[in-house]
Image (cartoon, rainbow, N blue to C red):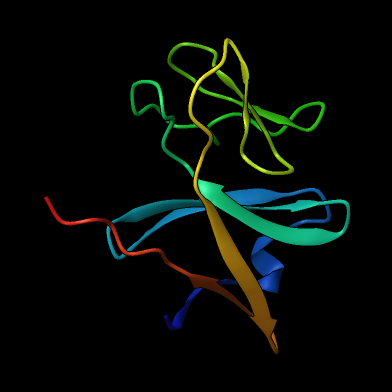
Length: 106
């Protein structure tokens, strides 16, 4: 599967984050421990935005119902539930590239 440009390095401050829609995926891109990572920005509980608030204590908290997700791997930490989808990231020059996962057809 191909990689697509989602942003540039200057979009991310040292501890920054941003979310963007790309080909029907709402992707949250952020830095953690010096590494650029990406997760789905859609809460697995009820579809709320996970990256609305800044990451705190290594977690993202959904705006709607306060579900907490690990920034390391997208695991739902409280109250428990499905993990967020992780995306593979690579950097080419100044471009941040993401590999999107195709959604299963119904």
